[in-house]
Amino acid sequence: MEAFADKQAGPAAASAAGTTARGEATRDAIRRAAEALFAAQGFSAVSMRDIAARVGVRASALYNHFPAKQDILAELMETHLLRLTAALDAVLPGAEASPAARLAAFARFHVRYHFDAADAVFLSYMELRSLAPENRARINALRGAYERRLRDILRDGQRSGAFRIEDPTIEAMALIAMLTGVTTWYDPAGRLSREAIEDIYVAMAARSVGLDHEEEASCSSGA
Amino acid sequence: MEAFADKQAGPAAASAAGTTARGEATRDAIRRAAEALFAAQGFSAVSMRDIAARVGVRASALYNHFPAKQDILAELMETHLLRLTAALDAVLPGAEASPAARLAAFARFHVRYHFDAADAVFLSYMELRSLAPENRARINALRGAYERRLRDILRDGQRSGAFRIEDPTIEAMALIAMLTGVTTWYDPAGRLSREAIEDIYVAMAARSVGLDHEEEASCSSGA
DNA sequence: CATATGAATGAACGACCGTTCATTTCATCG
DNA sequence: CGATGAAATGAACGGTCGTTCATTCATATG
Image 1 (cartoon, chains in turn red, blue, purple, yellow):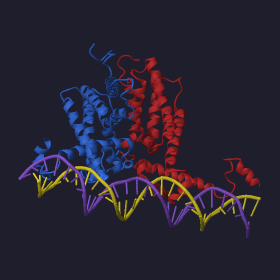
Image 2 (tube, chains in turn orange, yellow, purple, brown):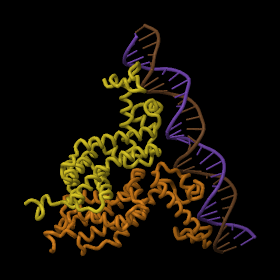
Image 3 (cartoon, rainbow over the protein chains, first blue to last red):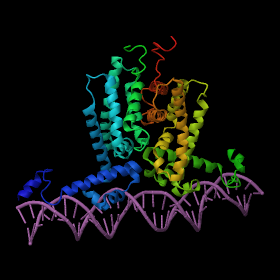
């Protein structure tokens, strides 16, 4: 009786009976397996049986946690983009900071974040085409919200005269493409540390908007 | 015409009887159809029947021209990369030109070429993973040969002091990622002309290596 | 303990996959 | 004109695909 009433209450009826903690663990394992496989081989090259095998379960069990293969991809992209944007907002200085400082913070954040979430990043940029139109529109909007942060920085810098750029919209996309490219070649065992790579990209981003007088400092700046 | 002239090549004896011109036309149609479909949906999301339907033929006919699906992709990538590198060498100034001029030429060429060959470019950068190891190694070498042109320009500029950069290898990959990104958003009906877009990217590339004093021209340069 | 309930199973489904092959079509050349 | 051989066909192959479903398993609570 009470169990019935609890049930009607909706999503809160979680721990009524059965095993819920184990279910959530499996769901998480599915997410991780799918992310790695989709990123490595592409969405349509990966079968539900592939994902299930990596989780240690049969394919039919996946449908206890996701209604369809496409929904795994959509959730992967959505949670990644939400986390990405939230993490960005947590470290990005507000409008009180200089555009140069905000740009540097953006570039460093983007590269650093991509070291650890390379699979999710790659997925979210590459597999939009594998999404049904409704999912694609939602994910695309999230991606746009992230890109907007950079575009706003560029526009502010352009207006204040700090940046010498032509088109904030295009340059934002160009910069993001450049920064995201790190996922295609980064090797943890490579010759450069993560910090060194971040520094290079931050410096390139700064120069690409026309400010680079930090070290040379020959004319217009302080000395 | 070409079909007749091509006779001496080993496996050919091409024009003995039957229809060779029509065969070559079909082969070409297969290439174009596969390129468009692979770029739009990804290699493994496209079936041989999809390609055949776009050509106007049955799937089994494809095997008169290519031994397997994978070989279509490999040939697409290989001819694209060979053409790309050859076209680059045709327009790139030699070592007698300044690194700045060579970098500008590279950037403009890359963006301009990608307007027309967006599908092939996208393919060659994205579908390496769909290739068997042997094909992948060959294609990867071709890609490396192209990237080497830019790396050499950056290194020359660094050595001569014209560029203020940290790491030519990484910056070459970053620049190529940036320039290639144009394929992800370029719209022929967009607000900017191709020339305008080229100019923006050329200017960004120049600034990203630390030279930007073309218009401001306050100190080190001529006037 | 009985039972309700979420999680996992194995079998099966229709559809589609890449590929093969015997056969047919058809423009060309001797 | 008839022979020739490349090109196209349609049927079929063994597999694999995403997904469904009746059933079984496992567990935590009343």
